[in-house]
Amino acid sequence: MATKITLEGSVRNEFGKGVARRLRVAQLIPASIYAGGAEPTHVTLPMKETTLALRHANALFTIKFGNESRIAVVKDVQRNPVKRIVEHVDFYEVKAGEKIDVEVPVFVEGTPKGAAVAFIDVQELKVRADVANLPERLVVNVDGLTDGTKVFAKDVKLPEGVVLDMDGEESVVSVTVPEDAATSEEAETPASASAASDAPASDAK
Image (tube, rainbow, N blue to C red; front, side, top):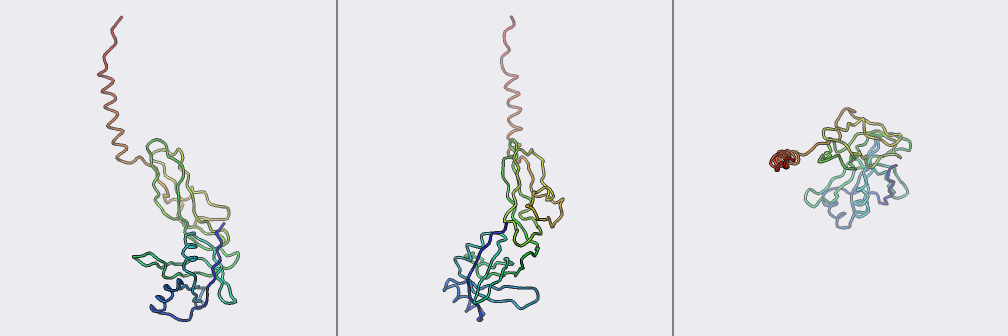
């Protein structure tokens, strides 16, 4: 289920770098709401609330301004390359019941077997889902998986109503023993064998 967030802003009629700077000083963020081929609606949003809301991947936003409101998802976020503060947000308006394509972050849980470690090969999966059911994250369980195991996109468990929209044969998670760990194990094995062969034999009775 998508995280639902409401933001209250106001219509924006001024543009340019100078205006953007003044908005930031006033703790506001400029944003645009796109809807198909129509002209975008330009608004300003509260900086603190918007920045916190953007932590939720694929959230469903209700943006209120004046006597209007729009339901939308985030299309693009522009950040200052140094300070990383949000400078502008593009939203895409959606309708109830509409299905859209989104990219969902991949996470792993669990512990592979032995010295094996799970590595994420694809950071995000492309899926298609109803706007009211956009997943915020997808979790791959690697508990007990052995060295050499791969989890493919088609193997990832998706929420009900969510459909994979990419090559199912693409590797999402790889389980492998890191080279340093494998070298360490190989070094220990001869030493153990040598210690066993050097042990004094028990006296024959």
